[in-house]
Image (cartoon, rainbow, N blue to C red; front, side, top):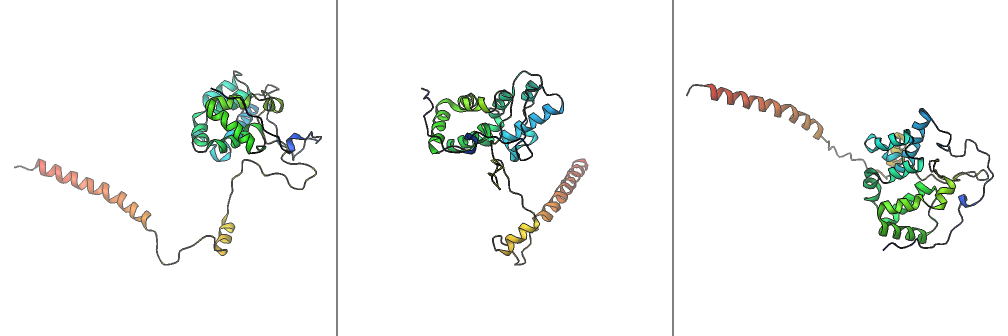
Length: 237
């Protein structure tokens, strides 16, 4: 038995306030197929779709959906259909659905497909019930068929984080998709603060050198054994 989506109170978020900003460098780039893109424009839309659904950490060649890309390039599916296909792919299920509980997965999907944070724990619970009763496909279908998705992205726009930066604020909200990058100076800083231990007791890891020696010795030993065996067989009894 499928339960209807439970009601939940809304909270004050930037995307719920009517905006009058002028598009500029600080505003997110909108990838749309409304004007019948061709060539590299289609490639950019596909790239944006992958980045929105899989995020930067999971954008590898193994997760590409070539059949889905072909359908989109030939106009058989819309951008919304492309996003739906990515969300229902085996890669997305394996990397996101199978490795998270329902609450975390719901939060991730609202961020990536509706372009905002969850309003409150009640909303997370309501969508988790949909996920539990209808399964992954039913949950994704209902999420992409919501009035909120249709009003903000429709059939032709790749979802994005809405109103992350406001002109009247000196600093915007953190993006949903972010990954830390550390350089050598940061590594030295961690060492100075004692947050990263370094071992200086003279112990050295020689496993790599031993492994290389084994790779050389084992084949040579096998050849020697083979030659010895052949000589033994060929020798007169």
